[in-house]
Length: 350
Image 1 (cartoon, one colour):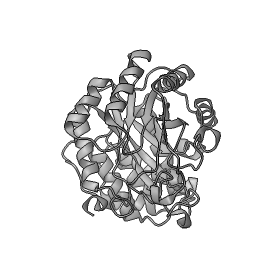
Image 2: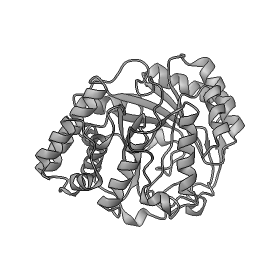
Image 3: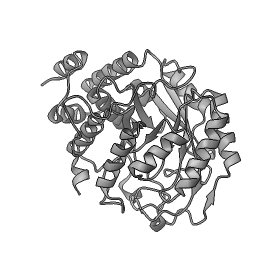
């Protein structure tokens, strides 16, 4: 199959199979074929999101050495990047949420390490929900949960979650891949939208691995998918592998958008960049506080971007940022893509 046929399939909103996604990923990133696929992915993103892009604001509720020991993560205890720990006071969490809302973020996310007290997460969610606008989506980025806990999160005011089965899950950390998948199912059964991503992508990951993970994310009909490259944080176990280029990441972002069901409105990338937006990324994150891709406690003073910077990047690529609450979380969650079920990426079988 050539690139013209791939684009023809996309314009017919047809499903792509693994070999076709591998083909998309196999073109040299600087080739005209890759550029054509990026242009088509941007067209699809604009079509499903009414020509609008979004910025979501995420802030950390804690910082602590984490025993799950993800090799790529600055929080991993064995990486010894951070040895101190703190938890954000509830009043500061409310203040950060209101700050993001006032700056025009389309959704607010709270991020925690894996062992953050679940009861405290619910309490802070209730506090935030009482202060932000009812229509502003509140999203959690936290550890694995049971179905009962997922329902409690919904009752506390969360509208959705970010959760992913990461590349090398179970091999380069102490997280059981099956548990990640079960958590996604629990959140969807509880009525929470799930956003996900193909991440963290490193130079060593093959096109086969990426295609399998792209198909997995498509199979859960997420609110958003996308792709994010791994940042080689100094002193982390995978730093020696280096980093893929923004152009290569943009190519993966495009392939991910083309493989998603049209009900999936969002296509993310991280960190925010012009090439990602050109390739169809219609979701960026602004960040405050600790971050697993940074060795500074306040990522907003280092790698993190604020809402205005994200807006500037989008402006450079001719994108218009949505005004008001996110539209990625406005429909009733659809847990399984039509006729596809939950696919089992290779990593989920480790």
